[in-house]
Amino acid sequence: MKLHQIFIYPVKSCRGIALTKANVGRFGLEWDRRWMIVDANGSFLTQRKHSKMAMIQPHLSDSGVLLNAPNMPELEIVSDGLGEDIQVEVWGDQVLAENCGQQAAQWWSEYLGEPATMVFMPDHGLRQVSLKYAEQGNHVGFADGFSLLVISKSSLDDLNQHLSEDVDMRRFRPNIVVDDCEAFAEDTIKKLQINDIEFSVVKPCSRCVMLRVNPDTGMQDKIDPLTALAKYRRDLFGHKGIFFGQNLVHHKEGEIAVGNEIKLLGLN
Image (cartoon, rainbow, N blue to C red; front, side, top):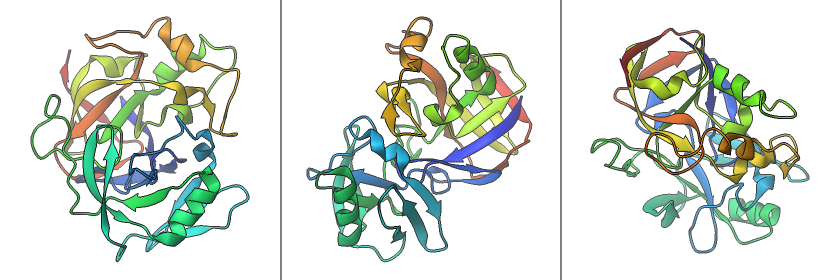
C-alpha cells in the first residue's frame, strides 16, 4: 500500500489543495480546515446548505489564505493578528475562534446571501476529538470530527462501477488517498504508519448529501453517489449510516509525502 494523493481543505467546505508532501501537526495536516464560515448565531456553514461553497478556491500565502470565487474580488486573509475571539459551534462543539474581520464578513455575506463571519482556529485553539474514539489530547481543527480521512483509490474505482458516470475523488474530500490495495482495504486496518508517524483508524466516515454536489459546478447533478453507496455501504461496523472512507487520528507530528510506503501495524 502506498500514499497516492494528499489533500488539504484550508477553509471548511471549500475546494481542496492537492499536495506532494505535507506536515502532520497538532490538528492534522498543516492548514487543513483552520478557517470556517459561521452564520449569525455562530453555527458552521457548509455545502449542505450552500452548495456554491464548492466553487471557492483557497490558495495558501505567506501570511494566510487567498480566496477566489466566481464574480467576486479576491479576498486575502491573514492568520496572524486577527480580531477578537468569538464562540462558534461545529457539530455540537463550542469552540473559541478568532474573528477574521469585517472585510471577510462582508465578502462572505455577499457571496452566500446571508449574514456570515469567517473565523480562524489559532495555534492555541482547543477542540478535543470525541473521547469515545480518541485519547485526551487528540485535537482537531474545524474538520467534522477527526483530524484526517483516508480512502483507497480502489474503493472509488469500485463505487464508479455502480454509477452511470465516473466521479472523482474530490467529492469525498479525503486527506490521504492510498493505492496498491484492494477496494475498501481501509476498512480492515486498525493502525498504520507513514514514515515514522502512526495513525489509528477510529471510525468509518458517514456520508451525506454533499456527495451529490458537483465540485466543478457547485450544484447537484444527476450523478448520485450517495444513493449508490446506500445499496451496499449502509449500517456497517456496528454504526448507522452510509459509509465511505475511514477517519484517522495521529499520534506524532512529522512529514508525509506522495509515494511513501504505508506500513500496516494492525488489522481488524
